[in-house]
Image 1 (cartoon, rainbow, N blue to C red):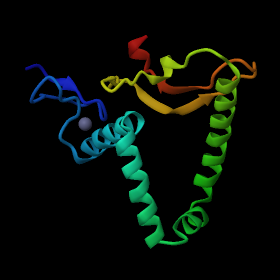
Image 2 (cartoon, protein in one colour):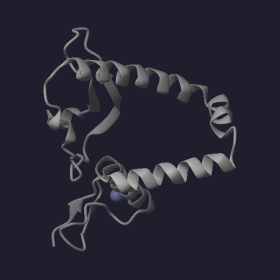
Image 3 (cartoon, rainbow, N blue to C red):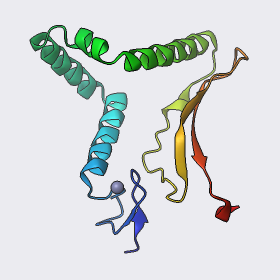
Length: 147
Ligand SMILES: [Zn+2]
């Protein structure tokens, strides 16, 4: 089997089978599990209910956890407020328009990253025109040898 790039770290590795998209590094396995959980939470109602109950139970055993977390991480609070404003705006636009939102349900679980691009950061393009959706974009720097 030919080496393929890992979905998470983009280093080439030899997959055990055609379904393996992540290498065996611990960080990449964590990313794989997180992606699996995101997928499961989105599409499996029973799993989502069980997770909510479990989280509720955990939080009851640690009262004041989120209050102290927010106090310790003011930058995260600021980021979350900005992202929530974007989500609120997106939800408002969705509830106003009658267009089907099936396009947003497509999950790109097997997307590959390019190893020779260096990501500068992840940004949100917030449109000024009212009827456009917010887009998340990755900005990469490309060295001159590729141009
Ligand atoms: Zn990897």
